[in-house]
Image (cartoon, rainbow, N blue to C red):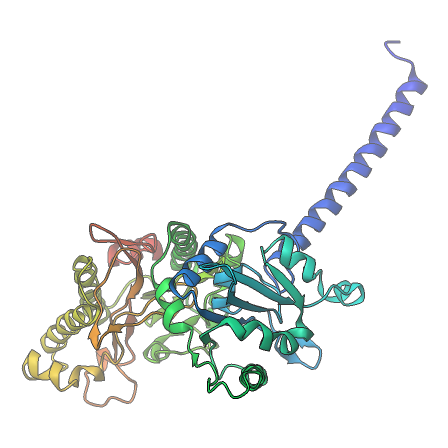
Length: 484
């Protein structure tokens, strides 16, 4: 024979055994990596051994503008859903923006250094604890704060109150947002009082406390190239999810089924979480602006309004699409939808540096008012209807809001009492709508229970703007082609 039979059998057994072991090892490694991946998006991110340099660059920029100030940012706590079960953790946005740290209970203090023009980064962290880490995941501890997050000094959380009076000595003013946590508020005020008393009869008063959102909001309003790439990813994933729903939704499905499919598509394609509570509103529910019950059966002949966006690396998309539960828009639904779409497209076309959000809202409202007049829903002149806000019966909300780490993101809408001009790097929404309330008796029956909103995420560029959510179809022909 070509080979010795007993030897061949032995080799087959060895090969088979090794294949089995190798598969088990691969499965173990895959599971371990999967679990570690989950930890990286939770409260205990021990996967990272280094973080991008832009977190420190943001701290540098903040302290360069405010070299004599101290900044205090407290990270999010874990909130309990049940006696011993927490809600999914998400770090406080300002804290994450400056640190990249996703661990609970941490605090960040930025203070002027004795070296002119320099500053110190101090982190207060949960200490390493083997027993607790066995239950809830690894912690960075004080060592991780220094090695991974570039802190100049780091201390356990329980030393925060003790260390703070000494740390604030070099500051002329303190930036800290009062009102988020009464316990922390008391600690901050107590620390400032201790410092004031240490001055004796110098005549100096306690350092004033200012809201950091006034300065950090301005930084966050203008997105860096890195932030824009993350937002493009969030918008692309979210837009594709909306497109998939246009194919998959059928009469008889429940709104919560659609919401579940949304969550699956977001997570499957790279979002760590949803950006906000999804609105999945069929029929009359679409006329409720912030409907979130998502628990009714979808009926053929109704419209379905979906306002939902996924979040990637703490940056959220915010997209709304409206389409028929059945295969086609009815005649009245078509007229209504085309009106909202016309309003939105014209507003997008006018977006460029120098334009102001109130100008966009005014134009959206005027286009809608003209449509309401042509449909016989309102009477009078456009100017009078706008000035008296009569159109708010059908269009009660604003057209835009800032978008970023928070779905209604920080940043001033006015400067020196005047609406601010759009500038490159800003991201905001354009979302006109049309809603006829079920109890509105003065409207033709064909328009009752119609709720339509079309919302896209807009990046202001040097030349004009870019629609980040453009992959989500919104023309009637494109939508009906998907519904066929």
